[in-house]
Length: 543
Image (cartoon, rainbow, N blue to C red):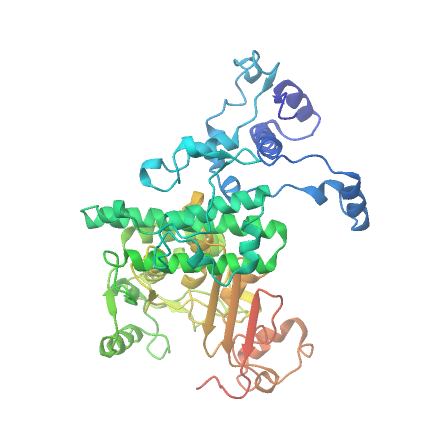
């Protein structure tokens, strides 16, 4: 198949018969070819990609790779984040006589390719929102067939450096980025579009003229999402050029625009520097044994300190239902394995009224008495995750500068499944709110997330956050950087890494004289997405 002749359904059916796959999966087989053709068509028509040259074949041979890998097109983030499930659901069902549908007049017996470029064009915000630059009459066509508006590096007004539409103010001290933007290459043209779009969302009179506060908030949320998408698209474009200096300066430029944008809306969003304290009484439905360190008094103690603190603070004492539903129906299952979630939920919901039970087992199956709970523990854990998700949204919507969530049960030892990284128990933790918040923040907009490119989690605790590292950074993921500052190291754990073999985590977890929970997993950093900082003898488990 190709962009000119489309997808030959009859040939595809014949190919499927010889694949050895069951008939029930033909619809997936068909959809995979539809997607492949749509991306190939977009690459040929919009990105103007061609076959590999002799130079590319030689380079690939030296690197022991396929020739096509040397010239694989870099697709914009907007294309990769399209709602493909919905798009494919609108196409004819595989049981229909697809090849007989009225395509033959245009493309023989083939089904035409999905036009992803046209789908993206239809999703652009209307000009009436003031987000699309000049009207269509002033639009110039870029070499790749995408709309590109000219960008000026001169102040819009007569030298007024305070003019929010003056691009120069955001490019100051970014020589590599300015040089890249001055080029006439297709990538530079697309990057200029993104920069124009970013500058265009700086507060305009049209938004300030909205009378209703809720209308203003809704518009602001939309504009923040546009900022996220445009920033990410620019990062993808510059990354394809492998210009590290320009990439750093693009991020710096975007952060400047964000800060200016945020300050422009704070008159109806929030005061500068406002901190949110997000908690919920349902968190104290989680009860533990009387001698347990992790008990309900922790939240009142934290709230007492907060109320005595000075500063620009606002308390949110109920988590919105929509975040509870989002947590339970979606985000929690992204962080934890389905079997783990089902086990914990079943144990909570089948517990007798006020009976404190063991929610997890230890390595010998003897009860795991440090991680206890009751019937209400599941609701409490979901409320803790919901509070974290709500906090992320409030910050990204410009309502607050930062957020603190005094919730329980705690979470940083809760991994994808029980006993993350070979720990002996879950260390009082049930679900992992921080990991859930990071996954929500980086999930694509098309999947209901916020579309952020990177999240850094800084974990300061006596113990290493083995659960958070397990969920976000078990292997290197460029979206996440996990930093943990904790007790540990050879002079605290007291043994060499190879001394105890596979049983090292379990042994150290049982004997306080030979280690500190959860063991040696926090002594080293496995890849560049993790920075573990064990503080050795300066911190003890009883500090």
